[in-house]
Amino acid sequence: MAGIAEKDKKLRVALGADHGGYSLKNGLLERLQGQYDILDLGAHKYDTDDDYPDFAEVIAQAVASGKAQRGILVCGSGVGACIAANKVPGVRACLCHDTYSAHQGVEHDDMNVLCLGARVIGIELAAELVEAFLKARFSQEKRHLRRLNKVLAIEKRALSSRANTQVRPYRLRK
Ligand code: RB5
Image (cartoon, rainbow, N blue to C red; front, side, top):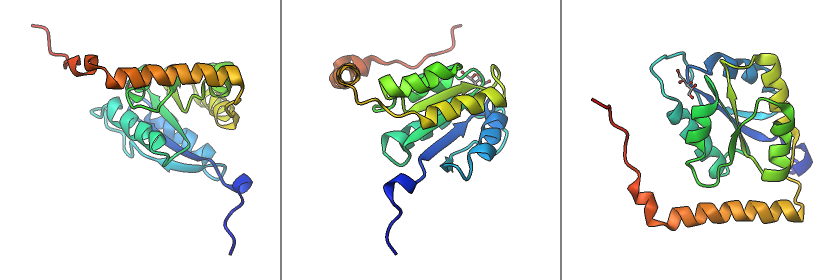
């Protein structure tokens, strides 16, 4: 049997959340299943001791490696997940709580991970944001490519710079 035509292939989307985003993530999962090829990468149970960077890394790696074409990350505010996901080269994660940014971020900036805050927005707005994000495509316009390449050049310089080795872990202040 011939393979599935490109136009009929479902977009592969990696979905993840910590405890702060757990129930919103499950709500989104219910709505997206069937429409998209969803990879639910956890959390798979509600655990107040889990940590958003663990899920952010898994989702970011899935997108950076090409295992998924887009990622959606949910934590309490969306902020921590966004900070953590952007540490993985190749990831352009953004916290968007308005539909304009959710699609324009893809069209102009090739955003590939959408971050949401489950303590800030509800399921209806989250579903609209996700739809705007997943339906959007990078414009390929010359000016957007030029800017994106400048962003990628920053990433490349930072990765090759010795400054990278100066990252120190935070410690408790006595
Ligand atoms: C977890 O309590 C909360 O800090 C986390 O989900 C997120 O909001 C971090 O930005």
